[in-house]
Length: 251
Ligand code: PEP
Image (cartoon, rainbow, N blue to C red; front, top):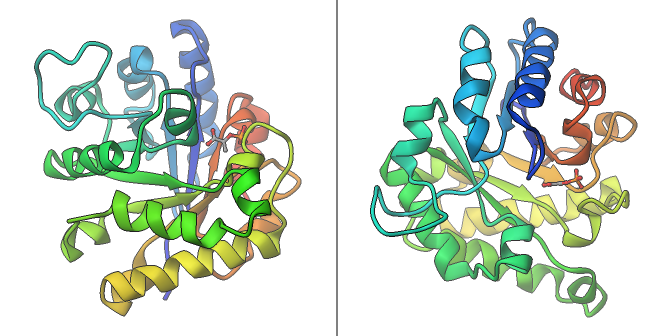
């Protein structure tokens, strides 16, 4: 099955309003002719609306970097799915390793966030990935399985069709160390097989699985050439228009 590539830039806790508008404008320009793939930006909450405004005539999608399961209420520091939508977002990154590691979000909370996003009509991008310690202990696949099963617990087949999974080995995030194309493909194939056990085969075949972890202009082409890699979630290299434009124009 041919899956539409998705190239996503996660700006993390970077960019002031002015910087975000400039970067978004550059990406709007270099993505203008790309009609065979999706390009998505996840700016900080504070600039979602400005970025959405700058890109209003482009095809670039906007995501939040996290999302709460509630629509409103006493949840200091959180952002609700309706807030994201009202600011111009259509997707949300959920379970990023920085949320898991620094802010101790567990699979249960991540699952609530996935349901919240789906319930209010945002496309969830569920991040999973093992630490170096887990990989070296031979636990990569059991960790991925637990994150997928628990993160997607209770998600219906229909909702699964709208969900994106991002495999991001923690040891490759922001370290300049990329998983080899073989390591990435092996993990992606494992996740797709697992999805086929949890859902129907055609759903597993249609779900986009992104790779994230030091993706850059020099490695994007070989990663994207792998059978089960359907896109990239990019951190550092998404903060410079030149490198992100090269990444989204992968060949
Ligand atoms: C990320 O933030 O999801 C990420 C993969 O970062 P980097 O590309 O910098 O490794």
